[in-house]
Image (tube, rainbow, N blue to C red; front, top):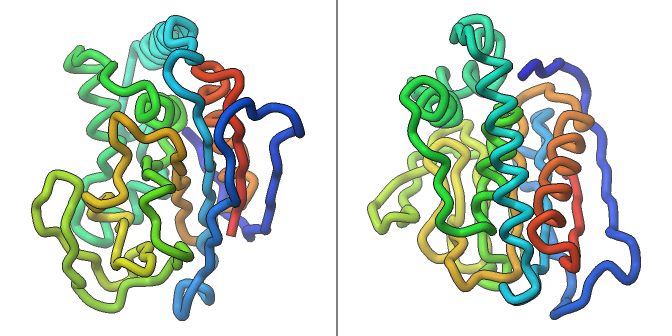
Amino acid sequence: MTFRAGVGTIRKKRAPAGAWTGRGGDMLRVEKEGLLAERNIPFGLVEVWYPEPEAWDVEALRALEETELAALRERYADYDRKAVFGENPYVRFFKKFKKTYPVLMQFESFLLKGRPFPQVNPVTEVPFLAELKTGCLMGTHDADAVRGTLRLFSGTEKAPFTGLRGEEVHTYPNDVCGRDDGGIIFSMISGADDRTCAKTESRHVFYPVFGTPDMPAEEIARQQALVERYALTLAPGARVETQIV
């Protein structure tokens, strides 16, 4: 879980032709606005068009989860928070908002408290497994619920929106946020909204990969590649597209 500081780059990768065997469509349009465009914070997106569940290989994903989680238990058998997360850029970023990094809490819940990996929706298990493996912050949204262009912006105030559990949450000044024509859909600090968060029936989704100030785009790209591998393990016929802005 070591991240290097550096200068970000822009990268866009398209999945090989013929990989998709179901519904298709154009990629999400993503733009950076205002102050965020001036900050050196890369943002990655993995967009996946999953086929219907009949074409999924859930057993293969479950086997992959067991392998990855067992490797984490072995690697961090002598876990020490300071050694693992002491220099983590996400931890530092969240501290600026007086928040504990949620992936750190999830990791310790799994590793130290023995809580089981949540096997409820394979589509959302993909990024959660990737978060535990690398410590990189992600999320899951229903791309078909996005209205128009996804516009990334830097929060300047505490702007309210409805969180994924139906509660009112808000953005923060200097937060990394996203909105569409219908309003705010995520905050890096407060999480996803209720309108675009992935549902059980979601098939066309996007996984945001959040960066931190001065994180090299290569780190985002590695996380995208990992998520793509997990998604194609679940659904070998899925269409996967990635971009970094």
